[in-house]
Image (cartoon, rainbow, N blue to C red; front, side):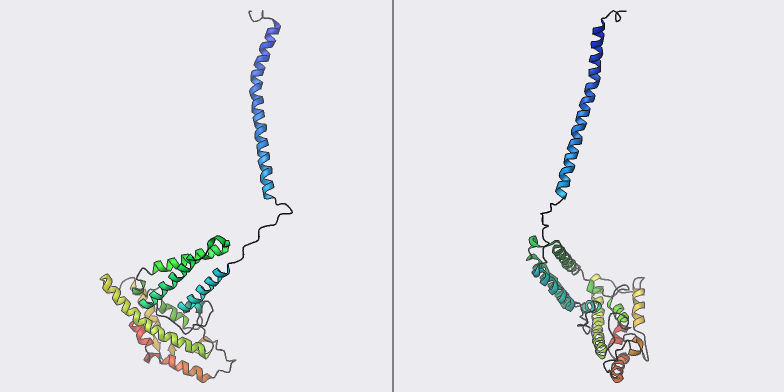
Length: 291
């Protein structure tokens, strides 16, 4: 009753006040949303402008490869091929097909360490600040390889030179077949292989000595085990020798890839073949059996 008695003007004023209290926060929120939308649109326009190059702008030229670094990498590659001639053969470079260094000797390991230290020191002289990204990556890869090899040389792996997974006696047996990396197309190829076989004989003797030294260092005695049985199987398979069968030497008839276009005479191959098939009387077969 008291509310009905209030004047109409006062009721209208109360209604407007309540309406204002409801609408005013909504207007504030709408205004804030407009500001946020304008900020987003402005940032989008700025980013688009930054990404879009003007017609008059010229992209920065790519940095040319560093000539000094290219020379350093080429020297490293060439010297590494001489240090690891079997890697050269596998890469298709046949300049060193007659070489097989004895990587089990202390002198060879010292040469390896000197080689990698030499190129680590050379990398220290390279100014990386002016290099292209590709050249920086080449420096990183070379540094990683040198440091990794030097770290490996800290361990006496030369005292355990034979295993059933990756070992020189396995490589020699595979390459001798004439279908692997070692070429058997010319007389010179066969002569190169005979020189590698002579070097392999020396490697076998060093391997035997190193394994005996390893036994003394570790205080253990070699005995048949699950680990050595597979190794002995790979060694015995390469030491088999019968008349006219030589697993260390691929004959011209077995390889089927002899180049006769240069006028090679069968007698040349027969001479090389006789040297190979007579290996039962040469050091390579006894050394392999002893190993």
